[in-house]
Length: 374
Ligand SMILES: *Cc1c(COP(=O)(O)O)cnc(C)c1O
Image (cartoon, rainbow, N blue to C red; front, side, top):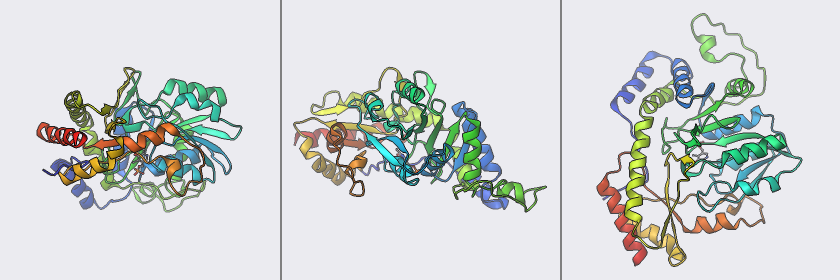
């Protein structure tokens, strides 16, 4: 059996809608992008949604919109994908790394306040695997110290924190539509916010800081004239990507049900497997289940890489989320983050996607049972 780590679900209707865009003569950011943004904002329940060509671009634009400057500091988890920290460094600002919680692997909110200095401007929580961070605590700290909260919600579509949908909680939230995320546009990202100023700045900066985008200039009744009102970037998306996104968004809840089914099945199968610790879903939260992670207990954790190898030899592709940011060679951190270091050495992320059959899930679980025994 061959079980990939992820399989995007693209239907014929979506393929046809991309073909329609290709035939229409308008390929770049235009009417489909507007339609996708409106549908996304409606789904999340937020005022603004701004479609860009990646989540990394979305995070970068949000930091630009809040006016991050060289020498500033931003609170970032060390247990995240490199993009969360990298975007801070684009400004010659410093990502101040924070260790993770043991249960959800999200940023440990109890360590945030002690890391705040006079240079801190923002907190960037990342909802690990689609499980929301402890947002009430994070929002209270941000309010007390006058900080912005920009959420890396690359894994969340959808996820709920105390009944509130991720995307409506902090000052701005960034989603990813990379090929293996909850919904995909190949490459793509979305900013959601209720803040008019952040939205306006992100919209203008995603296309060179132009006062009018190409659709307004070259569309009906447009003129060629434009002004550059702020320094911007080339972060706009295309109408082909928006067409894929619209097809995916229609099925976002079906995909979520599919991942939840896989998660429940894994949970029931792992109940009897000793030496394997499952991630918990806190009762205050609903995870998107973008990832299904297991951790090996102390009796077998030293064999993690061998176990990954033996799964690979059975055709099962897994992953590890993550090597903590501070462990990479380009980061000059001498600090220790003991929880993240410990977890990253014993974690394995298993295949999870809507089309994964019960037989395949059983195959994965049996392979792990065998590998952890031997
Ligand atoms: C995928 C991912 C990103 C980056 O998303 P892109 O759309 O590829 O830029 C950022 N943060 C996290 C946690 C991710 O998993």
